[in-house]
Structure formats: C-alpha cells, structure tokens
Length: 303
View (cartoon, rainbow, N blue to C red):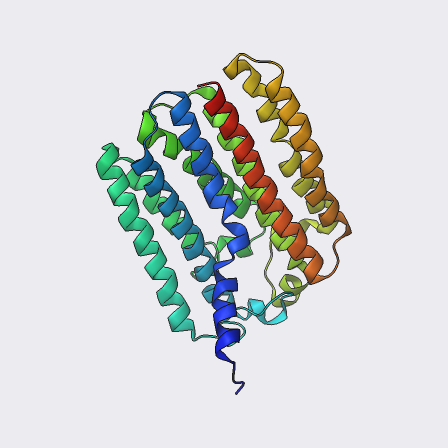
C-alpha cells in the first residue's frame, strides 16, 4: 500500500477541484449580471449568490466525477496528475462526502437566491442541474460513458443557457433574444472545455471502456468540433452591434477575440503529451473568461 505525503494529498485535493474548469462557471454569471445591468436591474447580492451556486456546482461535479471514475477504474490509465480516488490519495467515501458538501452549499446559496428573487420555479432547474451533474459519471448507466453527445448537450444547457439566462432572470426578470445568443456562445465554449478534456483522456478512456464522443468519433473530428465551438462565439460579439447600436466596437472586439481564441485551437491540434493538453485546457478556460470580460464591458459601456 503506497503512502502519500501531506503535500501530495493537498495537491491532489486542489487538482481534484479542477480550478482550470472554474471559468466555465464564472463566465456565464459575469455575462448574465452584465446583461441585467444593461437592462437596468443588476443586483450585487443576487449576482454573488449566483456565482457561489455556479462555483460550488462546478467543484461538486469535479469531485463527483473523481469519485465515480475512480471506483469504476476509469482513471487507472489516464494521463496527467493522479486523481484522488483513482490515485489512492483519499478514500472514495471521503471524496463523495466532499462532493455532496459542495452540492449542499450550492443548494443553500441557490435557495437564498430564489428567496431574494422570488423565482421559485427555478428550483426545478436547479435540481435538474444537480441530477445531471451526478449521472454524468455516476449511477449504473452514466451518460458520460455513452458517447452519443448527451454530455455535450447537458454542458451546453446547464453551463451555458441556464447559468447565463438564469443569472439575468433572477435580477432583471427578463430574457431578450440577444441574451440567449450570448448564453449559447458560452454553452459552446463550455462544450469546448469538455471536448479538450476528453481529447486529453482519449487513450485512457479507450482502455478503460469509457465511450466519450471523442472515443467514438476520433480525435481528428473532435479537434474540429472543439475549434468550431471556440471560434463561433466571435459572431455573438459581432452581433452585439445590433444591441448596443454601435457597429465599430463589437466588430473590433470580435476580430481581436478571434485572434486570441486561435491560440488554444493551435495548442489542441499540436498536443500529444499530457502537459500539452493541460496547456490547451488552461488556454481554453482563459479565452472563455476573456470572452466574458469583453462582452460584459461592452454591455456595461453601452448601458
């Protein structure tokens, strides 16, 4: 039985939270709050609660995936740093308990948000998000192992549409067409983050029997899907010209962002080793965050 140092275990817990994925949680809240400000109804307290919900759910999902993949043996052949469960850094029961704690924290923050906004019907959407998070790799037939595109659809819906539009709705009680466009762009970038993560794990997933979309379609096709998901949101920035009544700034921002977004695409096409995929994943998260900052600034500037 291997013995791990305190430093190794601590590093594994931090890695288990997968901080590189947190931009996928923060970006929709930032854009959703900026949209509420543009509509004249932003709320600091509700935005803060929405951010806490998003971050807690994302971290809870990451620990839940660590637990489920670990007990199935999926992480035995993976590239990159060892997982908590699969690498023997923590007991499966402990990892599961921490995942549940983050889900509970997200639930408490979510209830506070619903209380302040009065939008109790969103409780159904919140519960659906937790269920989707668990059955991604949990349960007897996790949809994350099917490779039929359901994982990508769920990420698009919950980390794009629901996170962004829901944030705005709890503050402004409105969801104009352009908000759905921005939310869709965020959903595509969240799918890109999932795709680059699965591209990194393709070899290990094949050996362990995890049938992701990358395993089914192959790395070449999925690199193309990844690139499309990351580059397409530039059109959403350009279409903001209709909303802010300025054809110049959104078009310039869209062009510059397209140039910046090409970097993670380049990294993904040349990546072969684990550390190269980690660079691509980091760059994807940073680009997504940058997109949210650019869009938020445009909405605030023209509010």
